[in-house]
Length: 325
Ligand code: ADP
Ligand code: MG
Image (cartoon, rainbow, N blue to C red):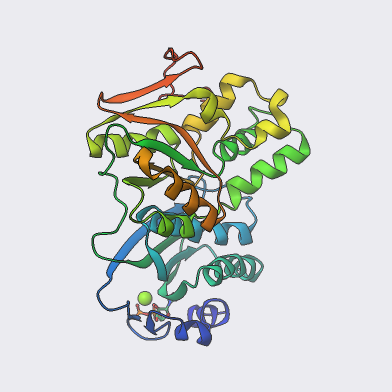
């Protein structure tokens, strides 16, 4: 199978070219995008390398899903609506048993978000997947990292920390009951980008970021770019771990908190909003059908303070968490 047969068979779909926002899809030297007049284009790329960003044993359908999900998550964090994406692929071989499920997982998520595959590049090489997404957002309404203000609430969507638990099981540092492991593994391999939530938070959230490298690390970007600090209530943060309900006794409490605060691969949104907008925030979560948890607040003093129920700061350094080596 040649390069062009491969593209035609797995990635080119005539109907996708008719999607809104796309004037010309796969097959020419360039794709042509037609964003809604007056909107700003939101653009983001992510490169996924075998061994570094995913395990070689991962189900290709889940990998296809995740490759696009991590990019859609960046659009979500900006409050942008997805339009289209390109796919640059390096493959060791044209393996149909890999390509068919990969394309299926990828395009299923693309269809779910009305985001058409409009072009890319295909070459032989060690497995690497680079996706660039294009979205649109009204001028001045993109959610930025720089807008958090002292006194704002700190919110997190969905569940956080479970993906890291699954990763540690794969690494052999942790054991989980079968049912709990499958649930955690789904969070690691099939994250759900919070695209609807991001758009619903436009005009409500003062700052936002998606959690890819760990809650504290990513929140740190918001705090630095906004010139503020934060206080996080440990008990509220622990409530973000879905597995707490399934397998609380399988994982020691300190490791649970580490996974929530520094785990990574969650692809949830962390965002800030003034307390006066709490009802609007909760309405946005309800409209997007995503649970939202208020885990703390923004303070003028730089840095992050993780506090217990009595308000006392926990002495441990979470940001540098590396128990697992
Ligand atoms: P060029 O050499 O002009 O860059 P190619 O011959 O590499 O174009 O690709 C032919 C067409 O197929 C182009 O429209 C390109 O965008 C598209 N394409 C190539 N690889 C992929 C891919 N992995 N997924 C989607 N479209 C692709
Ligand atoms: Mg090319």
